[in-house]
Length: 174
Image (tube, rainbow, N blue to C red):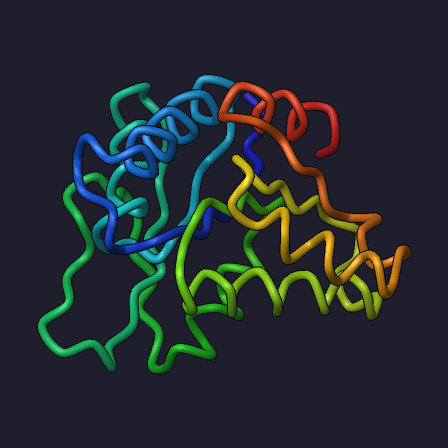
């Protein structure tokens, strides 16, 4: 067991059986089996799926929740909850505790998470350098667009097909 934490970003809208949900659950399971603790926003969708996969594999999970979401409660697979006061504090906490990042398909919230961690890496604010793993092809058009303009910006980005490749990449990178 390596005891390192991987922050996972993805959509809250995924439902059991959805491709995104299945991918998140498998990612959580494989990362837990590799000895990683997984951290995420702690609520539903891919957050629940990744935590479920990790918990069912005997892994530890951290849910970084936000008190600004009235009535929001961490999902049942979270073993440690960190409650923050704002969305900025929530994202900053997920970035700080992660020694690597997995980005699944998502919407504007996931885009914000990807953009912030990517910019912090590019500006040298994350030391040591931490890998950003994009699982599936969802973010590829955006990454291609940005790296066409700034090729050096892609040096921390690893695009992988699925959960197994994400786990292998993290095992080799962190």
